[in-house]
Image 1 (tube, helix red, strand yellow):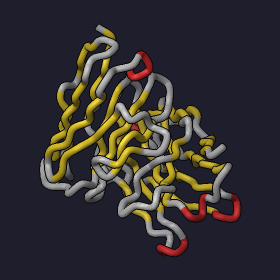
Image 2 (image 1 turned 135 degrees about the vertical axis):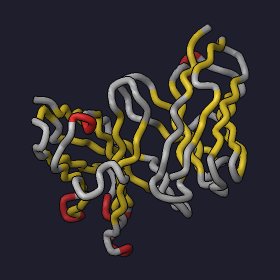
Image 3 (image 1 turned 45 degrees about the horizontal axis):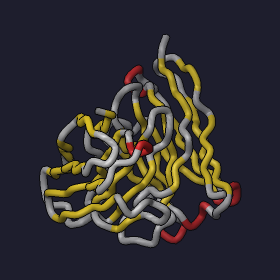
Length: 123
Length: 107
C-alpha cells in the first residue's frame, strides 16, 4: 500500500523548534516532489512548502509565513522527508500533512497524503 | 499571491442531487488547478488535477472543468459518502494557494 506517515509533532513553547518526519512506504520517495501543508483547527488548508527531487537539485520553495524559520529537506536513502521548524509562533499551531507527487504531470499535484501530525505552540 | 475564491462556502444538498462548486482565481492560472475532498479528521484526497483530469480510482460522478480564472467541480449524483469539504488549489505559481473550502452538508 502506498502511504506516507508523519511523526514528530507535539507541544512546544513559542520560540522553540521541532522537526517533523514523513516516511514513505509502498513507493520510492526519491522520485517524488514532497510538500508540506498545514491546517489549523477548524480552518482551511495552507501550503507550507515543497522540495523537488535529486534530479532537480532538491530545490525548495516555501510560503512567506514560514520563510526563514522553516526548512524542508529529504534523505532518499531513508525514504524520508523532513520539515525543520524553528522560532515557532502560536500561529504555527496546526495539523501538518506531508504529501507527495507521483502523477506524471506538468505540475506537482499532491496525490499521496499522510494522515498528519499535530503541532501545538503554547506556553 | 494568487487568491482562490470558492462559492458557495456552504451548501446543503440531498442524496441524488447535482452539485456544482465554483473556484475563481484572482489572475489566470491556465489549467493548473486541483480539487480535493476532505472529511473530518482525515487527509485531503485528490479528486481532479489539471482542472479536468479525474484522478485514478475516483468515481466518474466527479468532474472538473474550466481554464484561466474560473473553474467548476461537479458531482453529478451526490452519494452519502460525498458529504465533505472540498478545496481547490492552484499550481500556476508559488505559493500554491488553496481556496477557503466548500462544505457540502446533508439537507
